[in-house]
Length: 350
Ligand code: DAH
Image 1: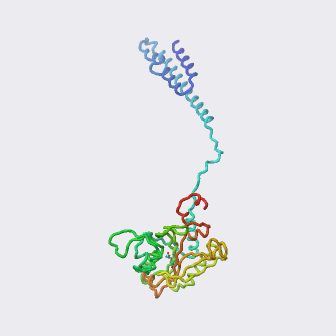
Image 2: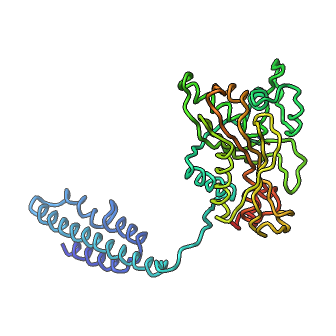
Image 3: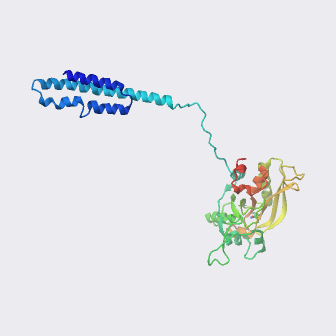
């Protein structure tokens, strides 16, 4: 019995000196483990007399309980100390400003496209998406450029090699105009006897085998417009494009139409917008006071017919222009190559 209180006292003294969890575990092994003095008391119970056995057993149990609870208490203390230490050590200041990270922005092209969608939406035009890989038939023939037609020379074309296509090779579209045929065929198929009127814009990439310079790229965006219905007139075309210019460049913007030629329109016109930089006096942006924007005209009867619209009942206008060209005018960009060069010094200005 004297032994037991000695065992307890010694163990508790040692426990007070334990300073970390490794020390605590070592303490547990030596004072409560199988070879500890206390456990030896338990294993020697068998050698005691019947009378002594329960008394010593009970006393040993009391000591065991006391050591176990002292161990648990010390563990809690050590954990609290460790937590306090780490709180003091790794201080976190939640009031510090966060690390800035660069957020993206819209490409100038996307911005101008969205602005054009908005301008035309206000005039009742919906966006119609058409494919970039086309057939010669859609890109040229159905638009009244027959095989061998000299007007094809205006558009240096990427042809894709494919077997057995004869006069109908695959091409990367050179303009968004083949979408006119696709749209008209789609709408006229809805009700071939009485097709619905159309008022759409067709945006997207076009591809040309160009000599690249500051105003020519091998790929660029065009925005095509198409309106088909009974009684549509050239004045509707002029009104629409003039309104577009005003909405883009301000109420003072003026437009000019010059007679031109495209196989798929008759009559055809190129249209210019008065330079917003110099107000038409002539400057380094425009040269002569007017900025060339694109082509337009009244849809040729053959094209209407190819789209499934009876030219006796329907008329329509169409136009097409380069989107980058509008962005260059609006933002004062002097080289079209910047758009696809992915140079952050350019892109970050928008
Ligand atoms: N597709 C022509 C081009 O890329 C532009 C054009 C001219 C489109 C007249 C039209 C149009 O819709 O009516 O050169």
